[in-house]
Length: 179
Picture 1 (cartoon, rainbow, N blue to C red):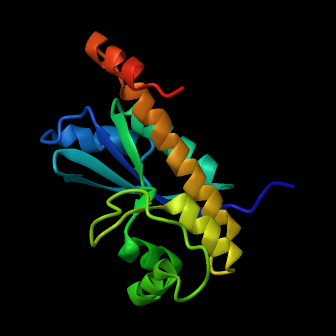
Picture 2 (cartoon, rainbow, N blue to C red):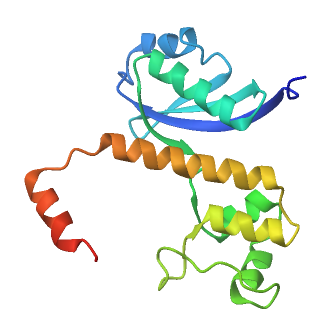
């Protein structure tokens, strides 16, 4: 017996279609994105899916295929894995103040350290690490961690597929290589 079909929300940021052409929206719709709200922001298509599938992975992969079938280039999947305190609060259904208490160690132990902008007033955390911590604290489902892992890995694959290193880039990469 198969898994129960559920509804999953995700966003794909895409380029490669003319944002000013009316037929770009039609192409996305006809390619299977009929369960998405499509908008244009900062010159990119934002395709917000509410997709029925047996799993988040199935929903994500089918959405990616549909966007590509329309002739668009996938730039990234959202929600992004880099999160600020407000993002964490929203995703876990808590207040920003609660997240601040976790991050400062005043509530809970061993909250993950920020991974970017550590020295600023608005640090960023890796959502995968935070979601794993939240599961240990029984404040989030294991399913949320699996979704976070999948989105982060898909975005890494997408980023690698976009990379075309010049000879200078390759030399710098070799110089920076750690033993």
